[in-house]
Length: 294
Image (cartoon, rainbow, N blue to C red; front, top):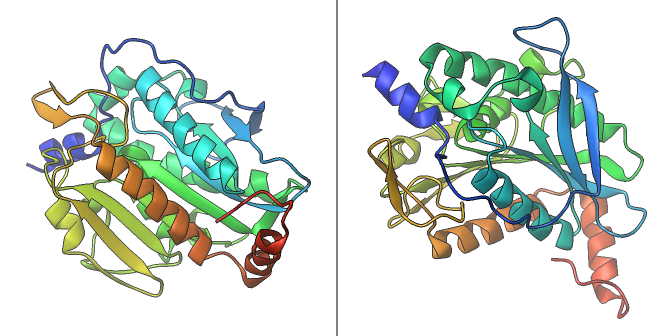
């Protein structure tokens, strides 16, 4: 039962889909070294960097894919999230954990032990990306957020734990806030979890790969914790694919859940910005010629 649950929770819902048009091209492809290369001596992680117009400093969001990696439907959805966040004044770094390690989605998702390992080294990846962003002069180092889908969502939850900054980040800096899309909530060993970062979880009521109820039953302390369940949504509800069965499980887009979750994510991040950035945004909104930013 544990093996089946873990496989279902962490598998990325991708298959032989048609190629997707790019929602928005990255302004720059960047690389930085992984502190936990896992199966080799050295790995240079690859990421797509998106930036709003202007000098900043801007808040920033790291996006983490599911265990299928940058397959077309997943990458398209990440570009859609990136476009939305950039329009609202965030730098976005979409991180590829698997391509640089030579892993394919189908091969990785079929191995339960590799999925367990991925949570650990990918949490290192998340904090590596945080440190990379902190070094950029157009990023506000105190306002770096994290979002993950499926396996990336489980990674995001691990990063939000009270022990995350200590176990995975040499500077002990926590993410400003974290959002997890349809993660495996069993990643929290204790039903009452201590958090270092505010955490919001989005779950689908019709998700038969991971349990929305398991997420709803969680309690947390130390930081803001919210769980939003979309009763009619299945796994991968923010991916632009028609509802279908994959490996016996229902997956596919739910337009209402996708739109609502994106807005909730932005509000959650905005609500947890540092006071200085909030003041700057309020002043910009009062300036007639300024770009409107929520």
